[in-house]
Image (cartoon, rainbow, N blue to C red; front, top):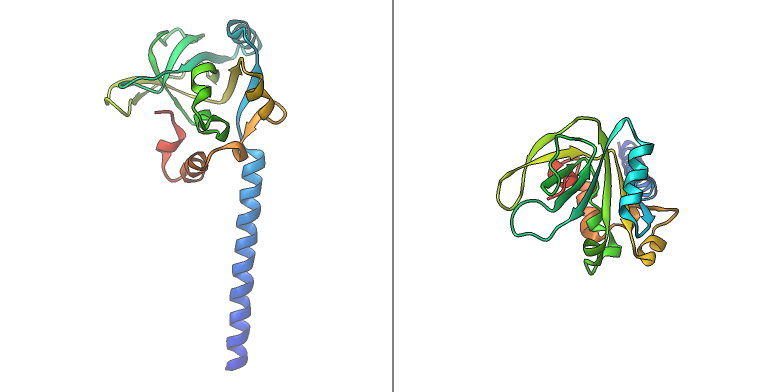
Amino acid sequence: MIKNHKILMRKRWFIFWVLIISATLLVLYVECAVKVCEVVYDTATEEVYARMVKENPDRDVSLIVEQVTTSGTEFKLLQSTNESLTEGRDIVITGWIDPSFLSKNNDFYMQSIVKYVILSEKGQIGQSKAYDDDSDAPSIRADRTVMITPDKSIYDSAKNGYFEAKDLSAYGHIRLYLSPFVPLFRRSA
């Protein structure tokens, strides 16, 4: 009886350690393999956007900027190849990891200078509620995100032209790992 108990305890400890090691390997994989966004260093945002439109004729290409507002959404649409979207209007981005939560953005400097190109499925627009005022705003699902920055230090802090999950702030990590359970974390505000 005692021998069976010892064997059972060893099996439990073995399973416990296998789970711990598996979880650790999974987290390491996510940290190094999940891309938050590509980064392009350029001061000519319009030229980068035009080039991406030419390179992606089978995708909708939208240029957005983060806005400071007390109502509406976090992002504003500047241009889009999707004619159904209205330029200068609030927009919600879904299915993405928000680059605003990068640790490089600890002083919120990036919000004032970067712009984003969002590639999405052609012609697909949804409707979402803005957090602050509960108004409806068009939404697009980001298949690919490209950050355009005029600041060389932001570009240099991206490894191989990408920010990865390991570059997120603590709050960004919380959002990333809870997003499968809280879909609200996979969209912009």
